[in-house]
Length: 485
Image (cartoon, rainbow, N blue to C red; front, side, top):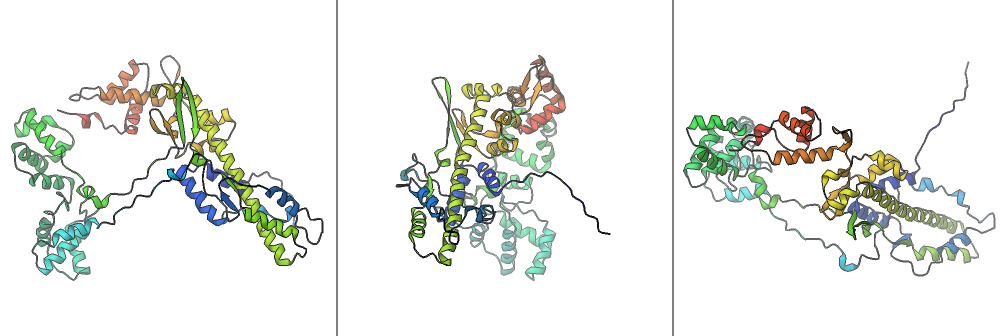
């Protein structure tokens, strides 16, 4: 027997407008501009700039106040939520009153140069090789990666030559051709390992005592060199500290990634555009939002005239009604998006203003030790918004300060207790740790245990493993690798 029953449950769903607003909030300035430009092309009912003579609201209201039942179009007949789906969301181009045409970003033309591999092939054309040797050399050049290395065993190269090029050869022949390729520029190219790359570069230099010693160390004691076992090197080669220091200096001049020095590998750098600016005026902080986040938008006058034309028309056909319905959808979407842009501006400003006030001592002094412990919930509670909203504002956005351009999320940090029971920021501890390591004696760098003891003496009782974690987050190597002669 079929049983029927009722079940009640509560569920929370975001409207398409809310979802798109959240997406807009998390966009940084440059991405926001691109989004506006793209969306403007999709909604012809929206234009940028100031509106000259605004009579849209009257036309909008009068047109849909038609009292004839058969010819009126009620607002509830149009499901704007369906229209504002993920597949069709209108956006707008940006333009602000303080952003003139002279301030437009000019695109920089880049020369279309040859690839790194083609650069090597062009050099190979000047070397005398038989047809088979040329084919092997060309295949080896094709195996060079962007860093300038060949990271495949020669046995694999030999098999590939047989299967793809129908060239049957042995490993020794390939290695002899590889030596020819390794004579190309930049020095160190086509090396199979870091030590081989360094030796190739050293052998291209004018031989001196320090270079000869450096080659010997790389060839026979590379592991001891990388682990900085300097006492073993001094004993093994029976040399003085000055001699070892000169050899190490020669090695430090070398390029571990020869492919990176080729100009053709240079990638276009993405410039950071600050979303906010903080200045100090008469001892007080002043926050401004980048004007490019506040475009002036309005509904197209042509669409307003279309509505007026429909109102004045004596005959209203089915096609006219369909056209007006389409216009109404565009106008509703346009009005919503303009409101969304304004709400985005307000949310960004309120959130950043709260962060600025919370970290006021830092922004006034620039001293990172003055950064207070701050998590997303602290700001969310203060501005009475959701934590996810604060996270979206802080993510991938920058603020221009008197001390440089900073990533906003870097101002957030966990807290811990010092020896006086006060909450201090982990950023403060990291800064002190970085300072202590910077002032250490490089011949006898401090271990994590000693660093923990020193921090404890300064009033920060943290464990050795915590010191190790903070050190790794700062990108500082262990004591053994920080050792210098």
